[in-house]
Image (cartoon, rainbow, N blue to C red):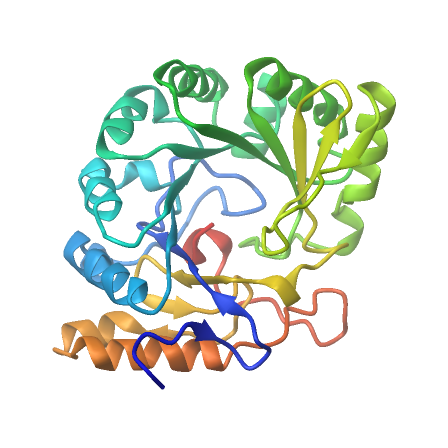
Length: 332
């Protein structure tokens, strides 16, 4: 295959979006992601360093990758993260660079990250209620997250989104307040159906607050929602507009899987390449790099990984098998 040929899998999906986890560590303990105690992290020497991440990105760009999202764990706990952001923002061929964070450290890091070249943020926030925040995250950090959002808005980030995980019989009181909060501040909230990626096997389908139920709640309490015209078919969120302004999105991996339009590939903090969030198998990029592999050998591994991508995760079938890694270890 020509070196410049795009990353296409056997189903014709072109891949241009890379998600990079920079750490598996986190400073909160959301129950649907991590156990409260006895969390097992990768040894620090097994985490990719900045030079390895930058090298991988440059190789991936040569294969058509032009969008990057930095994730964790919680990426802001990675020491000197603005240094990495500056390096990634300078890679020729990258058109979009974003970061997903829980926002706890954002009050202090929003400005250094912006100065390094970051312009887009997704901040994880399930509730504006302090007690429910403490119940979900097992930490009392809501004020820090809200301060981080306010600071990012003040600095002038181009786009700020709020990611909210929708767990049935828990967050129903939060759906409407989050949408109102986002509309008042110029943010976009994206509701994410609870997925089977927790570390304690708590998931079952009856605990998923489905997108249709949330759309009905928002339409009833705030105003009618209409699908956004001409949506990006490869975006993970289905977006809707209120008639009087404001957009909300739904990542409905359970009720409306978007696998057939997927354009994403993931690099874990410990250097494994995954073609799907739910993948069972992964390829060892770090092992190649640290054994002296050439750029061409790494390109070949990336192409093999994408070529072997399955049609989809099959959450709604008896064939589904949860990945052996929890979410914090895979990367958001």
